[in-house]
Amino acid sequence: QVQLVESGGGLVQAGGSLRLSCAASGRTFSTYAMGWFRQAPGKEREFVACISWSGGRIDYTDSVKGRFTISRDNAENTAYLQMNSLKPEDTAVYYCAAARYSSSGYRDRSQYHSWGQGTQVTVSS
Picture 1 (cartoon, rainbow, N blue to C red):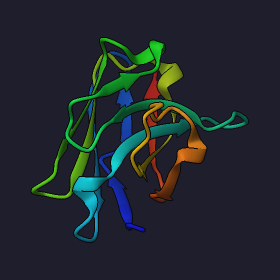
Picture 2: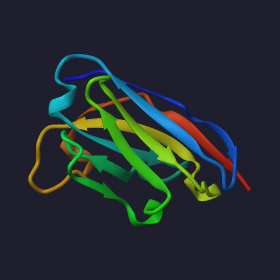
Picture 3: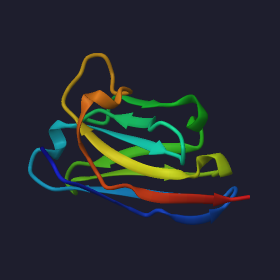
Picture 4: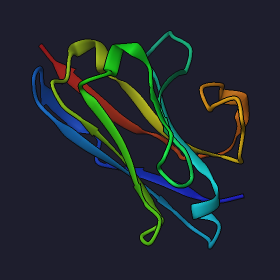
């Protein structure tokens, strides 16, 4: 297991940018794939983006492709989500999560064994 703490959320106008960070404890961060999920009020938690342990494999949900960028710094035990051109529909609590290796990708919530507490992102129109 690994402990995860998100930061960087806030209130931004449509078209603006935010950078979320996910700081991990422990020495095993570099062995985990990392994912970002979000949950809007009254909706299911949904996949946003994921990155493999090496950063060599990255995946995004269609609605954020071209606007969001996931990255990681294994030396700093931190994952990031750069969010540009934000839209009101991006408003949600954003969670980072860690998963062990999977050959089938990392879009499924059940693959993740550790979750952060979430950070609120609010985009005003």
